[in-house]
Image (cartoon, rainbow, N blue to C red; front, top):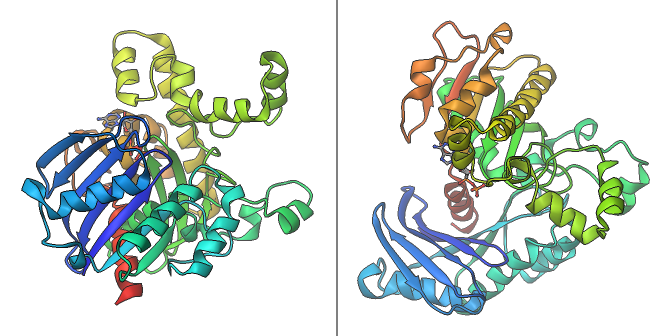
Length: 396
Ligand code: ADP
């Protein structure tokens, strides 16, 4: 079954065309700067790249162009869009209502609309993607796969905030967690690498532009670092992660900011970018630190310390750890960061093998010493494959 996987953002669209039965990736791409100057980068199979710069004014134009690229010219991969048998949508927030993926109906769209206050930037774009696909491919079923769903197994003790209880019952204030499809995929791969161990305690470190750690017990999310919104937890590319709430009114007073401005500041101008004053791209920070930039070095150390803090905390919650997994852009590619995070954790039975850690590869691998009680894995994430497979399961 050919599944078109769509991840619709406010000004960008990422897509993949996947054969869900064989896991074969047929094509992928991204449209960026929708409504500004519109750029489509399309990749056929593993290698053939094409960049189209066009005036793409709306999400609808973007999806039309993607479908055209899939069916025409030198990028053609299918004869007609009728070969697409289902569409899987990444949806940011499913609240407490969506505990698993679901077929998109009018009722489902309405429910996702009701959840917009919890994800004001993302859910509207996700809904738009669904509506456009239903219009352009009227006979093709759509499936919504939620970033929050995997974390719905978190117990109350981990998802409640320490504020008056009616804020939860009346205003849905709680930790939801994100990156659920990635944490699910990576922890499942880790369980396979642990010979399908029955009772498993896994910590997944998803370290990319956005980052989160998840404690996974017996395949289920027990706790995770992001909260009501993806601003919680780790220090990220441009997001502060957890900070003392008192910082917010202090900065608002000092800098004359309103609520919109302070949230924008903590989401887009903080984290690695804010502390380093250089960039949100960790590669640039590592390079600056190598050139002797002290603040870049502090940025790296702050980021790693926060990951370490959660690994230790979650090891305590889980009562030990069978495997720590690193994934996403930083987790998969930076041996330096993995090394810094694992440093000094030998007392907990976490022993990194420096040579194995430095080997470059894009497949799942073990990087711990043979004597390490805890396995350390690098597992490339594949959220789109999870979306395609969930879509297939529901549609078939
Ligand atoms: P997103 O959350 O946008 O999907 P990614 O998972 O692609 O992000 O991760 C992007 C981050 O990964 C960037 O900060 C980038 O600098 C970092 N990254 C990619 N390759 C490396 C590398 N070799 N060393 C250090 N950081 C890397």
